[in-house]
Length: 91
Image: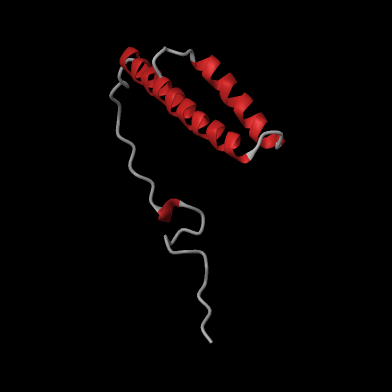
């Protein structure tokens, strides 16, 4: 996509495409064309979201070091033995 499209605009276009396809008012060929356009919009939105996530990660301070919590084992869970609560059927 040559022009930078705002995320909200791309989502709005995607919603319009979904409505058109779901309504059944357009033919098969046009539905396929709209589907292709929709997949490009989804990729565009995902790129914007990935960039935003990266920026947020860069702006966020790293987590403060603290005491390490021991990993939870299944023996700490109700039922306690760490084995599956499903009993095997022996006939």
